Image 1 (cartoon, rainbow, N blue to C red):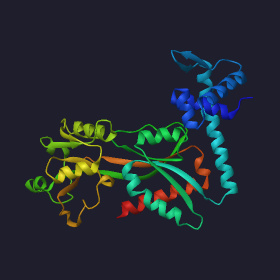
Image 2 (tube, rainbow, N blue to C red):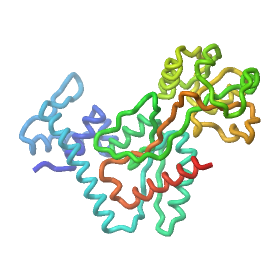
Image 3 (cartoon, rainbow, N blue to C red):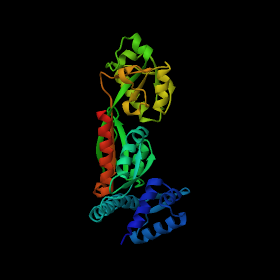
Image 4 (spheres, helix red, strand yellow):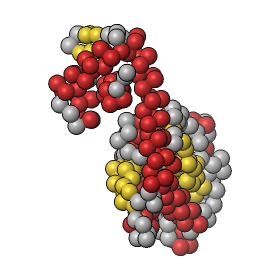
Length: 312
């Protein structure tokens, strides 16, 4: 009979690519991982790994077993969740990954609500961009991944995962006050993106999905943005807009505190787009994980935080 613990080790090896990396993710030694894999091959009755250069790769039988291991491990997780829902009152510790603006705007409210409840739930947070958060979810390093995708840039969901929509975050055009005044734009007035083709543009770093979103939005408006600055932090881009360095597209939730002033009298003028672009914010869990009461309560707390944020 195949040992589920050894199936998990094989699955981690397939994810991480090396024995050393798999061992580190499982908090085991390399020799211990190798011994478990050898034992699994004996249980399977066929080679699962073969040497390639200085490393190991999966044989066809190994790849087949990994595909079944994904289902088996998810079923075990579902069984654990079902048992937790039967025996627990919803308390526990939930591991969460969230992208920066969600970690700043949503997680703190959820944290307080869960901590101060009669039956508290503890959160453990790591800040990850969506791609990294979804990989952590697939590797079972976190229980919830708070991620986003743009309307112009849909994101494929991981297999055997469940999605809970939290909010739609509108993308706004941030203009220096002088530019908005010269164009006679009232605060909050919708604008066509094509009207700003000749402006200098401030954009996220090329490795970020936000960078591709801006390229697609501008491309749909018929131009390629003249990027004079790149930064991974929207607070940096917004500060440069305030300084008159250029214009930028910024999701509302990523705006620094104090930028949206009553009456739109701050140094940055914010405008929705005539052709809207939105950032869909969701919380993803592995299939069946919501049967764990603490995970279900954490999702509810995130949803309540998102509802409060969008109602302001």
